[in-house]
Length: 272
Image 1 (cartoon, rainbow, N blue to C red):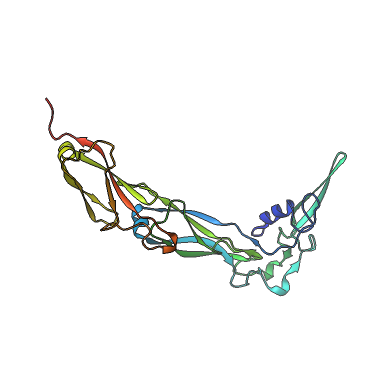
Image 2 (cartoon, helix red, strand yellow):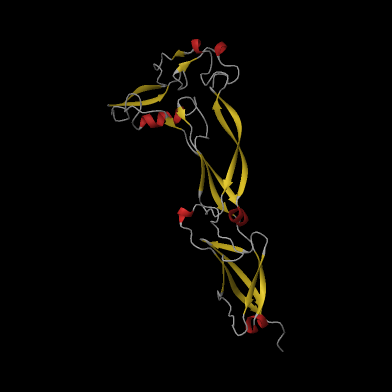
């Protein structure tokens, strides 16, 4: 069966093909159909989303044979299939009792290609298949601030086939779980564990940021901290960078925050 022949048969069976659909409706002229898209998951870390990254992704795809130009053999030897008149399908009629059933099927003479090439005249590289396999390396740019589920599209980079517009290669961003931070929209949440003395009398602790810098968080004396509070909001006015710092200003990016949440206060001495 030729590349995409089954999809073409399905499309014609439900209307819009040569000779009309299953209910006898006249087909409408249309251009080359588009091939299917190839979708891949792209797993990235929070560090990648914060700093940006370029990944090299290799994939195997089919391309039109460069030797025969996607014809399958010598052009003068290619003949239109007489069994289907070049359509690649045949209309089969079956009688089931008092009912007569008509349906389309792939032409067995040309395997749905609509053409017949003598074996001796087939292309030596693709052996009459019209396509060959090729390894393609794509540079996938993960921009700073990309969101979970965001798509990176390479138009027309999917499999090629004769008389078919290639589909797209699409990478979908999937964020790996992080051991320190949780992202919520444009904010980073950090769960801090401090001792009881610091919670009651004040002190400070440090947070290692995604770019390996350490951020100092100060608890003022008299500012009593309770488990589960979210008292520390560090804005990007000093050392913190916004998630979307490299993106267009037209996006109206709001300010990014890194939020330190204390969840546990541990005692520094054992009670008797």
